[in-house]
Each structure stands twice: as C-alpha cells, then as structure tokens.
Image 1 (spheres, rainbow, N blue to C red):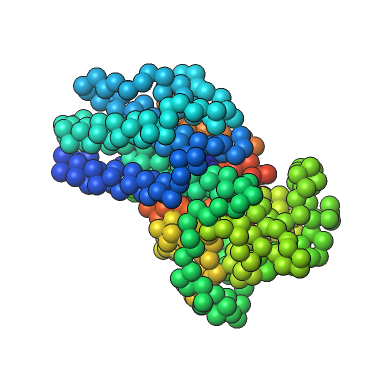
Image 2: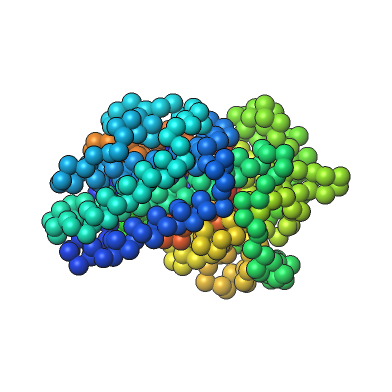
Length: 449
C-alpha cells in the first residue's frame, strides 16, 4: 500500500517499458504476469469470499478484480483505435473508484451490496478485457504502442496495488468470522531459524548513524514511478540515527505491559481520542487468551512470535511507542536516504508468507544496509503526505490518482509482505490516514544525533 484504499500514485508522464514495436512482447509478458498473479491470489477463495465488504474502507475481492479491469478499459482501451466497447455500460458506474472526471460512481461503503454482476460474470468481464488488451498489444502500430504503453504500465502497477488490497481486505474479512478461516496454510520455511536470526540481530548494533548534510531524494527518471515520487530534489537533514530493524512484537509487548495504552502523556491528542473511542489495547488482530497473546493471520490463529516485526498498528500507536522508547518516527526523507542504496529484496509478496518474518542476517553497523528495509511491514514515518517542491499533477482524470489525497494522510515507506517485488522501490510513497490499522503497517524508530 498502496492508498489503495486511497491508492498511492500516478505519474504526470507515466513511466513505462520501451515503446518500440519489438517491446510489444515484453509488454505482453508483463501484462500476463501481473494478471496471473492476481488470479493466483484469488485461487484460495470460495465464491462467498468474493462478495463481502467487511468495513467501509475495504472492498470485496469481486470489486477489486472488476475495478482493475475497468482501469484498463478507461485509460488504455478507450484511447486505442478500433472502437472498443465494454460488455456492459453500467460497469463504468459500478467499478469507477473515485475518478470524478470520468463520471459518477457507486458509493464506496456500499460495494458489498452489489450481488450482480455475479462472480462468474465478473470473471467473464475480466477475461473480456484480457482479450482486448492482448489484441491491442499484439496489433498496435509502433507509434500507437509508444503512446499507450505508459498507460498500460500504470494500469499494471495499479493492479499490483490492488493485489495487496485483496490480501489486506480479505484478512480483515476473515478475522471477523468466528470460525477464523484460513486463507492459505502458513509457509513455515525459515521459522525454525527465527530464534537464531533474532539473536544475531540482537547482538548487533541497534542504531545506524547518518551525518548532517544536503541530500537528494525522489525519483531520478529511470523506470516507472508514480507522479508523487517526483521531482527529484534536494533537502537538508540534520544528523540522525535509524534503527537497524523494525520494532519487534517483543518490544511492543513491553510497551503494552508498561501501560502504553493507558498513558495519555505518550499519545497525540487525536490518537488518544481514537484509542479510547475504539477501545485499542493492542495491535489489530492481537488477542489475549489467559496469559498468552495470540494473533490472527492469513494462515489462521497462532501465538505471537516475539522476534517478528510488530504489525497492524496505526500512526498513532507507532508514535506513542516511539515516544515511550525515547525515540521518534523517522521523516520520510531520512528513510529514503537510508534505503537509497539497499537492494530491493526481502519478505515480499512472492515469498507467499503473507506475514512479517523475523530479521535474518547481521544488524552490525558494519553491514552495508539496515535490515528489512523492504517487505515485512510498511513503516510509518512522521511526514505528512504532501507534494514535493515543484510537483505538478497529471492533467485530466489521472491527476486524481494522487494529488487530491494530499491532505490528512501520513506517509509510509518500504512495502510489506503483501507488496510485489517489482512494485516497490526506495522512492515509493504510500499513504494512509493516521488511524488506519488493517494494512501491514509497523514502525522503525529514529533519533536525533
């Protein structure tokens, strides 16, 4: 997340693969790869799972798979020559998310009442769009493909955002079922090494220092990026330290046991009000059974692993925890500087774990990078989601993708265990409202030097 619930972005000049005729094969392969990944995420679901909306901020899986197809219709197929026609003109109303420039839309909190089209009809609609898109890629002239490729690439990254939402929304839905159904059996690969890897991390240096100075952040112009990642610009950073790992469940449990949820002096005013109103006493999906804390995962209920990153906390909880720890949240500029040279690897969607994993490897300051910068959990920052200096949104409907959400949102960085590897990068800016908890969101601490 990508948001996703309110998506994460769209380029003024969308970046795309090469647009010569010879690149049609690469674009075709990329299209099939992303669409098949969505199909794989839907494979464990029963028909009934596709249609339920668990809360106003989430969407049924059926709506997700229809909406991403609608996106290709609206922003790629409609621009092509040949007079594409949707199988049902009503889909423009049902599956538009928030693009007012495109036309009216069905109310978001009521997406779960759309029983028709059926799941089968929705999948047929998706297949119809697949055929049209592949035909477009195969038959477009070099000039036409050059013009359309940026919008196709944008649609593919948009679909990858919704892949993550399928997982987070389904997790919320299944958590409300008293039977606690399993989405997919847990892949326990590497679990036996959890204690050992956590010990390795614990024995290393906890903090990594960065000197004061002028730095550059933002997208450099190579490859795809959303418009909110640009323009690249300079910023001044005071000397700071960044934690080598995201905060763990064990560390967060100490915060809980020290009365973290009962101490208003630790909380922002809005956060304290939200915690009292919602009855927060632990991260979302945590439950206490006797003396043991357990949590709900996409593989069902299980005991908490103290070594894995704490997950499903709001910005308010992350900020209170940071204050309790004698630290603060990192600014997004600091996070990007720390991650700019790190390889994009980690526990991402392709791992099929769909849950944060304990750190592995050395946390020593002599190591080239901090651990778990990508994957596992989105990391809250203390930075409001706002435009970079010189930012200009795209013209037309695509300008609504990002720019109109630059208010009352906070920025997260790094991706999660549900984020596709080809979708994340150091400059990626996710954003959610500060009370959001159903995303795979955690916290990495920072301190001033």
